[in-house]
Length: 563
Image (cartoon, rainbow, N blue to C red; front, side, top):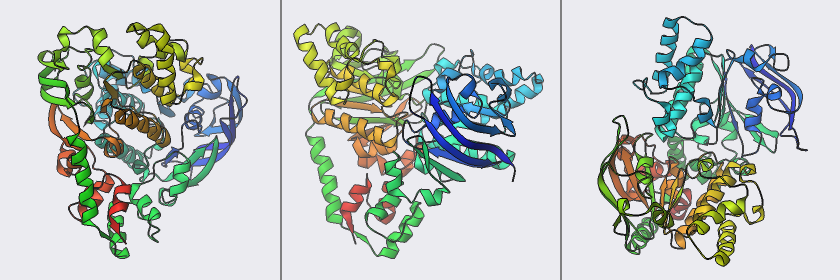
């Protein structure tokens, strides 16, 4: 079979460093293949992708050894621009790829530069937008789109080039669960209908079951390369490489079963073959624990009454929201892209002012409160930490808040040390924040909020772009802050994070709050989740299929399981 890509003895070392990021890579990709590349942060995934269209070595400085041959072209012998029609790229930092004034022009830009006819350009624009679910968005400004919608737009603009090789670096990082499924369905459809070769960098293991092969990277080396059904059963190997195993598979591994199911159906069959059962009394103790925790919440800190918000241009983002958040709660706000989640939480600290209705913090309307006072009560951690980091040193970043709020100077150093220790950055006080990894910058953003000791910490997609181990570290920090008395409000698309950490879930759709309740109650409402374009968690589905159980983690299931 013809080769779409050949990688021979590939090594790369960035300028100014003494360590190889890629070390002796060798692999081929067949035409029409869907290859998934997985591994922890820093494993070399994005660097590898950057070699496929000549960004390395032509635009990124460093020492390149070996060869990368794309459709017969050696990347060393051709400029990056020569690969425009051969390799389509969706970068991890996808927002840097957007620059046009409306959606249609963004998608049309590439085909226009190929000097195609107006009719062909229009066909490609329409087909690409339809493929990613953005029909009817032609006149929208990219800046008005949600993070997930922007990501779809970038994918559409790449699809419009109709390259034979598509390289997608975490293409679903900001999409809701159903949106993730849609993108992978698009990938499979393109692969089957047009014989397009696809290479995807991905952290989410359940999404790569449809790949032809998986390459696992760690420390700049290829440590495994095999079909998904082989690699996804290597639970310990996956954890070692910063990847969350499929829960149903890990459950059976931890229970020392001879069966290693990958899907819910296979898991149910294996459960019956093992002759296992569920102890109902143990399960009821989980329900009682949920109720006891809810009974300990304190006074109302945030109250929203009849909240409506309309963006300039007439887009109604919120439509009559009513809710209360009490002291000590850990609330997750979930919903499809564009459902109003981020718009809602931006009202909590005065970043947005209601079009109608009101938002009260400790009984006081936000419109009557100075924004500096609000910031002292409501700490806000943005989805992209680079949107709030600005100082030249880590220590200056974290001390800015307390100093700005007028805390005594002699106590600021102690606050800063305490905040940095909480996020494991105490040894980085003199570092340039932008020299840190994405996960470290996210933790720094949390520290900068934490130093001012707000009663409520609001986090917008706190684990975006992190590998599994980084996500766990972040969420264990947030969980610990909640245990210390901070009320947590979190927007996320990562449903395992919701099931493992949140006490309460608010579900939004089309600017409305359509569900609100304890996490177990909301996540066990499978039809309600699907209505909101959310994907049920595998362990919850597993428990429901076994009876009236809703396990929020495989640990809960193991606790209730009777061999």
